[in-house]
Amino acid sequence: MKMLFCELPIGSRFEFRGRRYEKLALSLACDEERCGNIFQDQTEVLSDATPLPASRPAGRPWTERLCLAPGQR
Image 1 (cartoon, rainbow, N blue to C red):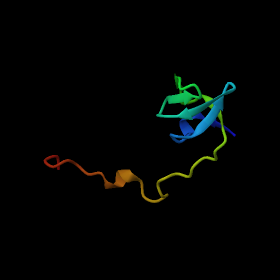
Image 2: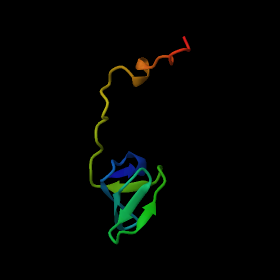
Image 3: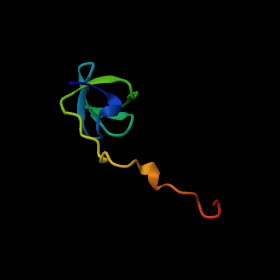
Image 4: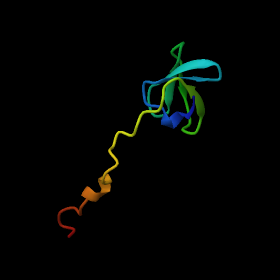
């Protein structure tokens, strides 16, 4: 399945230009020969995994809990 690199969870495996990679960080992946490669977020890759559901429940946004710092009221 085609996905953007930024949509892959860390630790997932994917294919790009005929080589297999494993995502190690937000923009870093390692191929089968353990050579690190930098990927841009909008790079299309072929992934075997299905996309994971959003980790946050679809309730109130986290910004509702923000308030002013003490002394700024």
